[in-house]
Image (cartoon, rainbow, N blue to C red; front, side):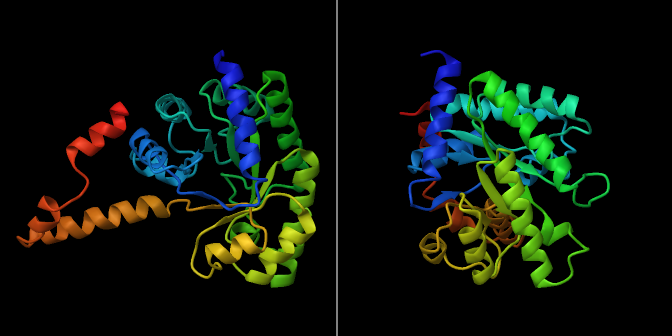
Length: 282
């Protein structure tokens, strides 16, 4: 099986995970070791987080990490695991559609099978017109079709975080539904209403859009069992997985500064041999 065939197979596998009736949980990773850890724990697919990838490489989020650097990270992650990998590419690192086309082609060459694609402008921090975003989604779908890899497009909307003109709950949910339907029609496989947390709004989104919905875990979001019951296909953690890791490091570093914390080190179940096992897959 050549690489393109294997990639297409993983893409179809990733698609099926969103239509299984079971909740797909994706703790977003930022490097190869995290990817290997989740594979070892039995996760069926992996996702990156743009915030985590940028921060762990010394850049702020918002497409500040050089695109070539991002590609090298994604290629390495894909190379060490056998699972489908979807990448958070923000708005595609492109200010025009010609560059977007080139970037999607280069992203596909890393071996990824899915993307998160946002509908806000990195310069103005405002929502893009629906028509503009739909045109971009259709372009991505066309590149995907020509590459013979059914790239999974998770269309993210930032209505709840950057749609300042939608000041009422009703206007926010109405605009979110409008964009979801439009993105679905343009070729999106999944819809990601960032920061939506209300049970009734989530349930309405599922019922009206009739497509896989991705919810990010933030304060106020219903429990995982509840989300699965109302038909959510996928949940992700965004930067939260990184924050948990940094919290553990910060807590230990604080204790060590005060001459404490040695027990946490010597009693840590994560040994060097365990990490070597992950990397060497033995």
